[in-house]
Image (cartoon, rainbow over all chains, first blue to last red; front, top):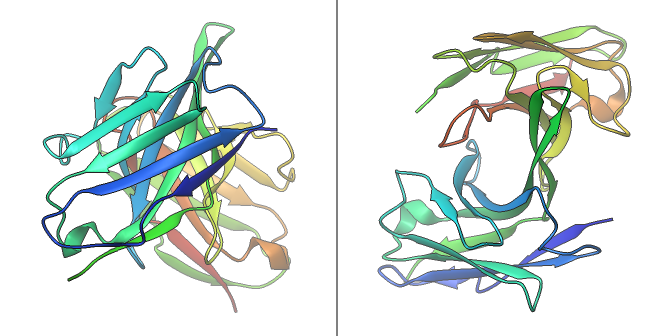
Length: 126
Length: 107
């Protein structure tokens, strides 16, 4: 079964760029019908979708973060990555990667996020 | 952006209780709604998608209903392992958004 694992620095200084990688195992990142997403969750708060990428390189970003976010994919390594620039303390959160599925069946486009990585805490502090 | 309002934000219940959580969307989202369960220190786990389709492996005591702007998640006969936070999510349009969460605690 497909599993996702986030990796990257747990501490980033203010104004610098946060960089995380999600490694996909147990399946190919190039499988049809799947997009690869990043979601974050500040401590004790709700979930915020950051963006997604398809293997073609096509991306969608949350407008609230769009000016600072870049998501890329490396199919040769079965990985996708997140870069968030000019970080502040407000970017401190647990960052999750997840697979977004879109399955057309019986005339309906079924959509869901599954599986998720275990999450990685990124703290922005000097 | 589509806003999702979950209610209640917190509820206290006993093992064996029937629990209902509501999620209201600020505009119609057809049936593009999913529910997730999250336990402390863990990633969210998919329970239901397309408003009422149970994810494989999820116990049948979980059920979802609704379409348009109002949705419910029902847990029949609450079990000890069900005490967690539940999140709704709309996938009708971008950006994808989540509700604020409902924490279910033991009475």
